[in-house]
Image (cartoon, rainbow, N blue to C red; front, side, top):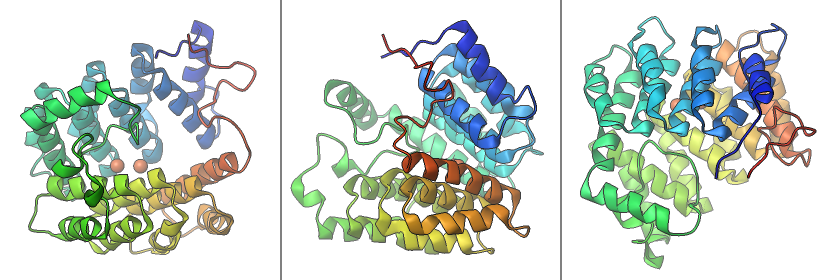
Length: 331
Ligand SMILES: [Fe+2]
Ligand SMILES: [Fe+2]
């Protein structure tokens, strides 16, 4: 289902995202970005690709994420340029590599392979997962899985994930016993088993997300003890999808830990903004204003407070940068 906007609405979104007036708040720019992401069009790719000269790593990593989710190969040159730019923030380069994995064009494999030895751990780990994902997408199991997605009802989560759920938990192959306590414990063991590849551990992670019970949330939270920032930030991201109040204590711990990597704390802040229970707001306000917090953490809290307010406002749609008076038309 395509979403259509007029050329002037598109211009409004571009001006807002790229902050042409120089006075657009960051969280408002985020809403414009997510509106563009929902358009899924070549125009959206073109506009989002223009934003990579911005000083905010937070904004840029989100641009890369959205380009991956739109899934158009026209975004690949911009993403490749970001990955190749060693002076760019590692969080942004990571997201560019992950987006290349999401778009899943085989032409990206040799480029991603060049960065398997990058000096930034989060970049090389992302490239490892992205290569494995593109190879899996083109495997027998992957092709069958993608064909089955087109056939049946709406998926649990609409995101393009960096890894599919484990084999037994792919849609169509799932049985009741795959969702019980034994399954959760088996998946938890896979999740924390550093002898497995990151891709395999990610598959366990996304299986646990799809199970989504409090026990699965606890199993996922045990991954916060890992030493890979990439791995931990993905768990926080998943908590932002699951929106389970059960994950709040572990997310607050991550947000409040100055020893934790910015990327992980950023995802924890945004997950808390999405969960939006009353007790999280004072913490988000605190870290948005703390002078000793890294910029990415402060900005993430700003965006998270906007998400929190949206969740508690009864507003219909978060990605509403065109305002309620100009609804997006869905033909
Ligand atoms: Fe990420
Ligand atoms: Fe993020």
